[in-house]
Length: 185
Image 1 (spheres, one colour):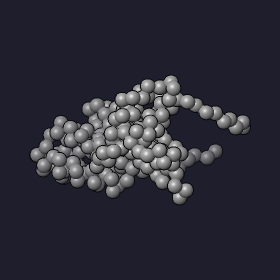
Image 2 (cartoon, one colour):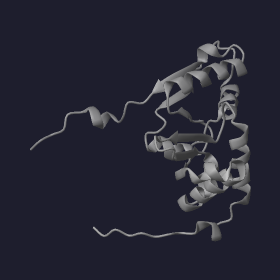
Image 3 (cartoon, one colour):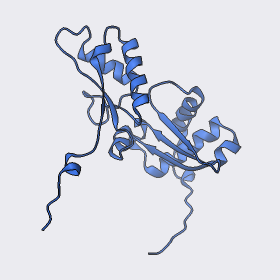
Image 4 (cartoon, rainbow, N blue to C red):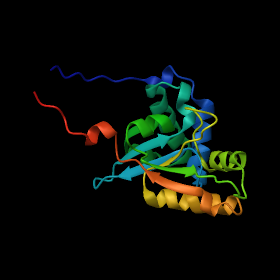
């Protein structure tokens, strides 16, 4: 298979101002919850892989997402820090979920007699960072780890009084088809 080496200057072709500035603001703020989720993985070499999970990417092509992330780091961090970034990827919550990066989810399990409504739960989930790209009526509040999901569940219970028993953390283990025996023949 051929090996091709190319350089692409996406900065010259893509408008990045607003999203890059918004992301730079988020980098400086380091919020406890909400979007974007900025994941920085540092390797033993000191190099960094950055993944930004953010529904704002919805209409931005992959190359543009990378350029915006790098521009945001250029605005918010030192040139030395920026030079350590070797891979920058941007994904929406549904894209990250489809790739298996967000297997934990918080869902509201409302019962008759609960002291909160479905609308209150939906609004609290959106404030916490839930995605409404796939279905605006059914927010997806997803996480990479159980620890992150449990911390969010606690924040939801604090944000919405008397809602603690409503919030359930689920963990996806894969497709049913992955667990079924395969036919040989």
